[in-house]
Image (cartoon, rainbow, N blue to C red; front, top):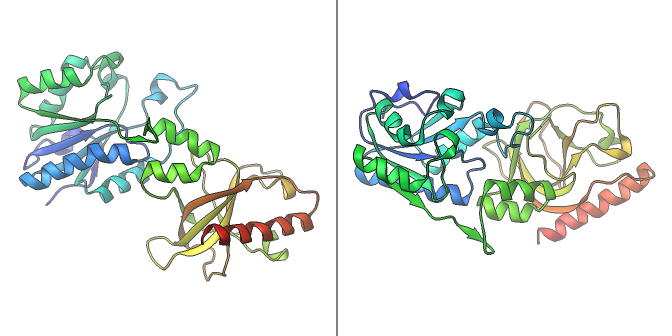
Length: 313
């Protein structure tokens, strides 16, 4: 299929050959609830020999409507697009969310999409999906306008975990609270950080706990603390066990107080500066804290390593 995997405008799909089954939403985190919507579009496309797509928005609408307090995203657009392709989506439309797009009346929203993408056959949304000017449109309006346009509308009920709906908002709260086990349950995969290893102050080596330093700055920050993790060279190599500290290292703080992610391999590692790695967060061990001395810090890290090994059993 000669189809771009990601586009930033509707015009790129104006002459699309084949019927398009399109899931629509912000889909930040691509969690289990999102997958219920997206996989329905993928299944319909495969069953009918059509094309599956996702229409998502960048930047997040909150940056237009609440620039002073925008939503802190779980993942950047590049990571989200890669995750969507992992689910099986053929093409991702990264639509710029601007005032012109936000001003489209809800009653004209689907007609606008159909005019721009003639191949549009069906759309897939969550049951609480809102759209159009002032978010006035709902699923009932989509169904009504879809009938007139020959576009099928499928809506998925919200999936619940422990009796509460899974949502990106809920996951952000759990990330900030350090509830990484719950985060992973809601996502349906392990929360992950990626980047290339950089050199550090090498303090870890001097106290017997060398670390891999990762320049990683998520919008939605996890709780500062120590976590059990596993890591590997990005996309290759077996997983290795480790502990990670995310925070500002108050015991040995410097003038640079930006949070950092440092990973200590429990069993040693051959990775070094420049290597791209992925780090999966598995368990929360303890909050970050300031120690009275480096010796006290060393003693606690020894305990953290033991805790991580126990958690892995």
